[in-house]
Image (cartoon, rainbow, N blue to C red; front, side):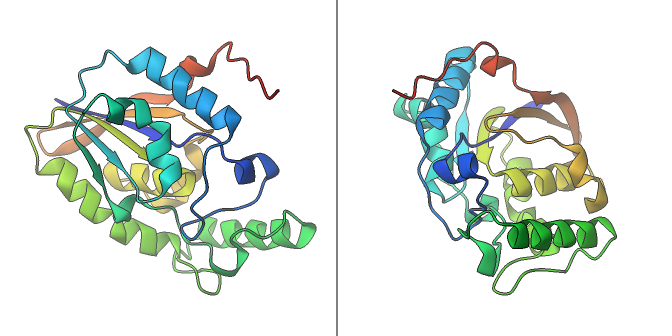
Length: 209
């Protein structure tokens, strides 16, 4: 069985402030994000990964930098990028922005997966572009153990795609920073092996001095 470790990137300063980043903002990890990345590395550094995949945004590859530094093969896939939130990317966390996002999430939950903000993507757009990364995972049997780092909303959509679930169920996948979902691939089908695993963060102490 192929085993795929799918994690969300570590925290950025915009994450901390509750500001949406999306595909168009290429932010760095903050101190908390770097500590989360280190905690994940310490727990999983002995897993014999054959390949690392990240999105094209640096917060993903910064999260798995120590694995990359160990000379593991690494490939960036733009298909793994976060959903583009268009006009709302980087905007302050205000009552208006929270209302706009709440309405959009409700629209998706009601089944209109093509709804999107001006200049942004819909979850259907993301679902469609994630089919290429899925095909890559399916078509490389020599890569038996994979580490894949991506983004919160895109990860939820990806899990729906891999597990053949409707997009209405994407809210059922919690997505704190560096959370792990372990997925298996065997006989042409993906299956969930570990759900919402954040055990590497237990007891994590962040020093912001």
